[in-house]
Length: 469
Ligand SMILES: *Cc1c(COP(=O)(O)O)cnc(C)c1O
Image (cartoon, rainbow, N blue to C red; front, top):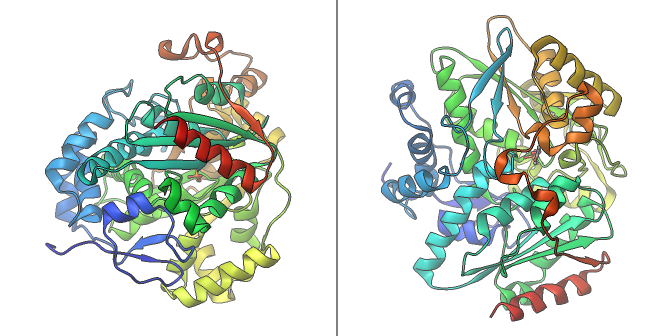
């Protein structure tokens, strides 16, 4: 302790960076993702001492070692206390026991009704803090399959040093998701609907980051889950749930509906920090590249298929690279070679030993749309619990991986009212939007449609930056 936390890239760039630097940089210059140079480990006594903290104060304590040398604990505490003010549940991330020993950890009590708010509300404030220090503006460009975009927009609207451009796949987000983005009228916000898939949007963002002159010109920065600060801000709720269920004196398992692998990576990080996490399981929809990998070492990209759980309609899960880096014992050269081959061929060859390691640590379950609806129906019938399609997939994955005597906590990632069509189809009951969003369908929308062409999108970003100055 007392030293500075430094960050290294999964592809080998070892220039030491601190938390503020990687917060603003997002992706590493070599195309890799930043990782803490070492994992902070808390002792059992330290974990126990955190049991009594409020959620925001707990979050500050858990994030502090990752920010060491850049942002101090007192500042983090203020930012965390402010970040969770607008959540509509006093526990912030309440646990609900929906079956014996199986808990839903509700992460959807923030302003946009999905778990992205948990990290993004803090991130907006971290950006403000660091940019005020440096007195400079940035342009946030992000790709979203729905929830990241609305959470980013909600967290960043009206912040004066931040321009925001969010790309979403045209027609592939739910109407609630789209409207949560496109009805925000703050002038620093720009929404673009791309004629393509989420992966296309994500590729455009990556290409903009890879274009160094452009990156400089507009002061590019990112808030999608490649940003380590977001992963760090997602660790506290795993800690909170584990402590509430008896950790560090009892093991706990987690199941997470997974798309870009960011949420479950935070659970992995909590385990690395010394929490006794027995099992980690992920759920996927028909876009099952991750569950195919975990069950049969088949990491090959297929066409993205729209599903009832659009926030998981992803084939290239960016954060998987961080897990791979860990599984390769942090051999950045090997990680870089595997990632480059994957990009070229659409197929990842992971050494058998490494795969066995992954297979032993994380299990996976895939549900198609019919199975998802039937899971939603049976959860409702048995427990009178309305689960959104993402959460239902997580519950199924968690149930499949349960061990006797070990509580299983499922990340409930979205409010059912965010996906009303699926919920009505499964349960016959229309989930109501919370009061602050009740007039969402009456608000005017503002967004541009653009082709999946890098040059066109870069020009749109330039125009937005120019307009807001
Ligand atoms: C983003 C999201 C996911 C996937 O989370 P990742 O961190 O990308 O794995 C799952 N469910 C919902 C509702 C989401 O918004």
